[in-house]
Each structure stands twice: as C-alpha cells, then as structure tokens.
Image 1 (cartoon, rainbow over the protein chains, first blue to last red):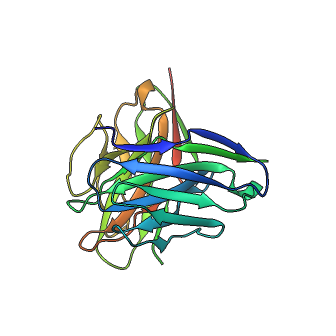
Image 2 (cartoon, one colour):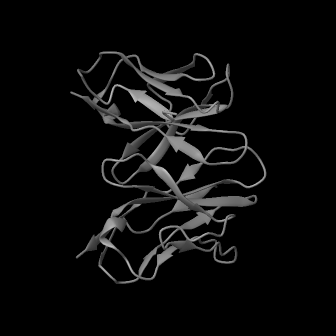
Image 3 (cartoon, rainbow over the protein chains, first blue to last red):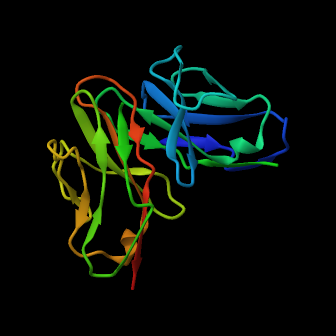
Length: 112
Length: 110
C-alpha cells in the first residue's frame, strides 16, 4: 500500500496563478485533511472531509477550496495564489477505527 | 478554548542526556493526546498516544489531567531522536479534528 500520496512535491507559482494540489489514499479511510505547516505556527488545518461528499472549513480556509472527488481523493485548490500561501502542505487521512492520522509526504509551495 | 501549547521551539541536548518536551493543553471534554514526529525529509508520523501507554523508541508520555500536561520524556537521548515533535489532541469519545501544537525541534548533539 502506498498510504497517502501527494502531487506535486514542489511547485513555484507567481502571484495570481492558480493550481490544484492532489491527494489520494488507499487505506479506505473516511476522513481526509489538508494542513499547512509554517515555521513557528505548527500544523494548521485548512479544510477537512469527514466522509465522501462532505467538506468543512478548518482554522485557515481563506484563499483555498477543496473537492472530495471520491473516497480516495481530496484535492486542494488555490484560485489566486498569494505570497502568504507559501508553505508546506500536508494531506492526511484517518479511519473510523481510531484517531490516528496518516500523512502524505507534503508539497512545498512557493508563491513569488 | 481548545488549545495545545508547546512552549519550547527548540530544545538542544547532548547524546545521553535526559529529554523532556513539554506539552500543555486546554480542552473542555475528555481528550485523547498524541505525539507526532517528523524526522528530516520524512513524513509526519504517530510516535505515541496516551491511551496505549506504550514506550516507543524509549519515549514515554503520561497524561496528567490535574496539570493538563502530556510531556514527552526519554531518559537518554540519541542522535537519531533529532526531529520535529508535535503534540496533538482530539476528543476521546467523539469524532473530532486533531488540534496540533506549534512543535518543538529537538537537536541531539554527539
């Protein structure tokens, strides 16, 4: 099993450009999450999806949209990138059995 | 307010020294506490959780409800323990989001 996969690993955007970060999991987990990791700020939740077909805002949703395409996939979209969105983005998934989250390798995004 | 506080951004010790990474929390219900670790160039992964009461890689953490703390301890640090450590909490009985602290970077010098 690959676990949680993310693409791309690295991305550089110019201010105002748009892009979609992809995340997929093969563990049949119901819940999926998008976080951003910034120095001194820890991991902050952007959006999450408790099950297929549902999405909810987290702590820092402004400037982002998400799509829970199916049970496996949960994408994060930046419609108009801003330098403040320069960060490392992590996707995670969690099964019903317990509260452990499994993380992807991360996407390092730089917005110029 | 639900909150996890890790007061130290950086903790530096020499190999063989004891380590204690502090974590305090504020939570209105019954919490479940975790420590996650991120080694260099690796993904974030679960280190241990309070309900399992296990020792993982020599690390232990005891939930102290009176002091609302969940400090991570290891009696003798190793160089391979150098990593970023995050304390996190969620509800013990209900499905809820994980709340992370800001993280502590542990550096273990030879």
